[in-house]
Image (cartoon, rainbow, N blue to C red; front, side, top):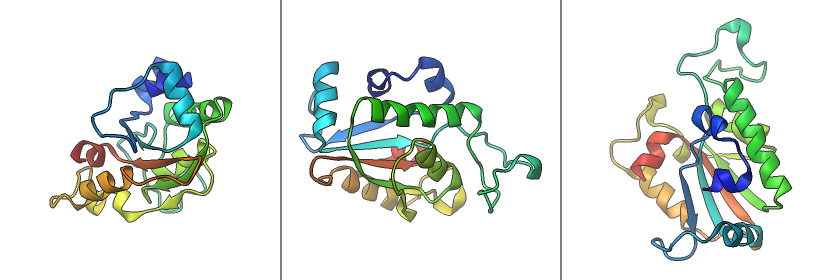
Length: 173
C-alpha cells in the first residue's frame, strides 16, 4: 500500500523493493488508514518505515561491473534495484514526507539504497545487517528483537525514521 501511495510502479515492486512493514507509534494492531489519511499521517511524521534494501542479484559483481565505491566488492543493486531506490526517494520528496533518521544495514546494497533514494546521512547499524554475512537472520533472535524495539521508538518530532535491512531480519521480526 505504501508503494502505491508513493507512486512506485508494480513492476519495480516485482523486481525491487519489498517494503515490508510500516510500524506506527500507535497500537501495533491498528487498522491501516485510508490512502489520503495515510499520506497526511506520514507528512506529519511519527512513523518508522522498515524496508528491505532494493533488488540485488545473489552473485557478487565481477570486477569489471563493480561500482567504484564498492571497495569490498559486496553484492550491489542491479538496474531494477537502482531504479526502485531512486523512485522511492523521488516519491518521498514529491509527497513531502519528512524523513529524519535513516538507519541502514552496513551492507553495501542497503547503503546504496539509501544513497540512491537521497536519504540524508544513513547511519550503518550492525543490528540491521545479516548474521555472519549469510542470508539468514541470527539464530537467537536478538536482531529481530532489536528491530521490533527500534520500530517502536518515537521518531524525531515532525519526521519519520527509515530502517533499511534485509528480508530475513524483517521476517524474523
